[in-house]
Length: 90
Image (cartoon, rainbow, N blue to C red):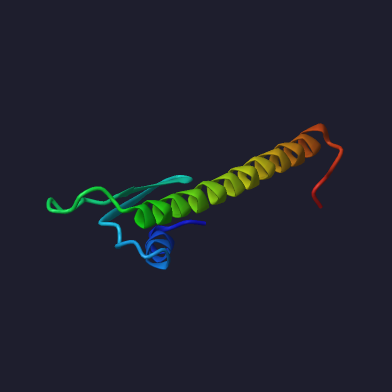
């Protein structure tokens, strides 16, 4: 479960500067980092750290998506049981 605090923590863990803005849209977190005008493109170690953070976030998103799908399937099955009368609430 990624939130802004986790995103900032991951950036710090990989030696990246804190993101200036992180916005969460459901299961997607978007990070905007405004580069300083005098800085060039990220160095290779920075690029590697950025790739690791993004890979971690992709993996977590995949886990959350699978969990959501399983929960939806369970809910649908439970509703079917209740609507057909095979299961009764006491």
